[in-house]
Length: 195
Image (cartoon, rainbow, N blue to C red; front, side, top):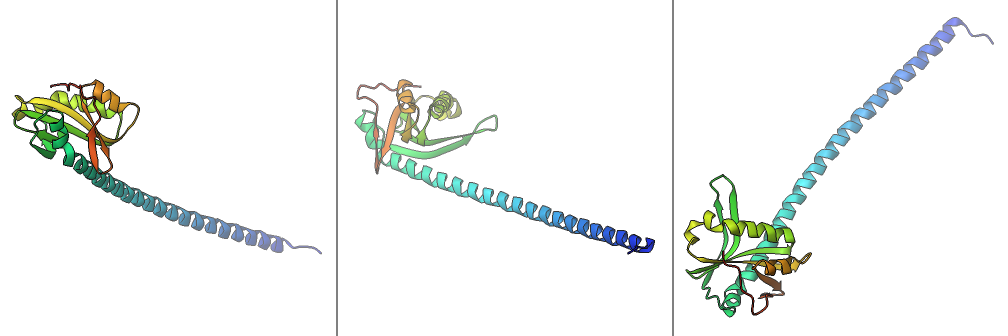
């Protein structure tokens, strides 16, 4: 059986059409894949954003719960240590001259003495160092307290890497939130650092 030139040419044309059709299908598949990939990326970013919002909300609410737990016992705890605190203020915020901001979780005061409390769910050494640095600036940032005796405290549910011991060695009160209350873990003969 012999094949004519025209038949061979038609076979090549048919093969070329099939290759072009296959290429078109590959391009269409690639376009759909790119669209699906972009949609997946968009959805993942949206999911990440929502998860971050939920995490921030949880941490904020958890932080408020921790602050409330500590604040509820704070006046009695400090009075038991001989510091005649009469009331507390939570979340003292302000703006610095350089445009930055500050926030202190709890201030316990009586007119003469101020105890600044930093509240953390998990206290880490870096938190203690950062709080000490902020305490060094407290009277400059808040000149209305410049003549007050100033003490610092960290309150925590869990302490990592000896952060609780570090706080005590740096002259801070260390307050552990326990169950539905809080307690100062410093030794009875502890003398707090006065800024």
